Length: 134
Image (cartoon, rainbow, N blue to C red; front, side, top):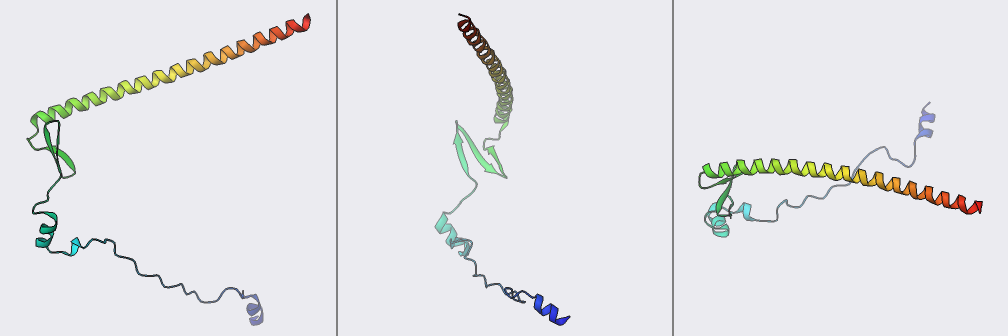
């Protein structure tokens, strides 16, 4: 039995598995700013770096807690945002209606084109039969 086991072993593969050593990974960040202390970072980046701020259409917007908010408090801008949301919904509905109308028109055009080609083929067939009779 032992002789049978030895004869069935595959000579190409060894009994041990030894993978190659993996080289160490490079540093995730090439920037050295994260290693600097607070005072050095303030010198490098500026004294005060806060949330992003932008001015659009006379309204000043500030990005806080994952949302853009107005710095003026937002009572009038809240109404404006609601008006814009309603307008957006209205335009989306109008867009969907126009898409549907385009689909219907394309279907009608396809049907008319098919009917035209069928009629054209019938006319050609009638002409061919008429020529053969003469």
